Figure 1 (spheres, one colour):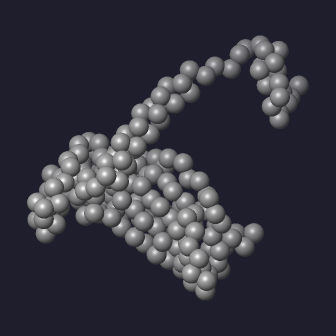
Figure 2 (cartoon, rainbow, N blue to C red):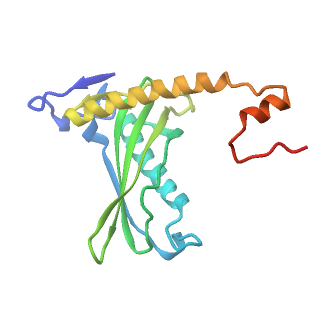
Length: 199
């Protein structure tokens, strides 16, 4: 469900929690947090789990604002840690709804870190969280459609739809993987891999 916005007609003050369509900008969310020493791992960098927790928070806020309901995390598509985050960095997580289905929505998250002494900014993560809206009885509930306000929003909507299709194709292919009964065939197939079959 998508709608292309006419910027001259889009009245943000008219958007309510029960609106059948909401613009991307209505729910865009930014969370910024200072990285403190207790967030670090044994290597002295910020623990990946801390960043994942913050990403889950910003995904929830963004999704719940668009849905007008409680939302739960259904899946996370690829979390690539592109750069380490240092203690003392200021981390900002920018989230926006990229795609909506019937009861689910995809929230795109971009994470940047800033060294507050040097003002150097690094893009550290990009990820996509699929969230499902729930009603008070914990049942999936219809989410508002999405008003796309510019070309970037249109591109992200198409990209998210394509990722969804590729994910479904991958699952179908993964379900068809069979391990040969013959140990000899298994050994042949694993030639060149860094593993041994015990016994």
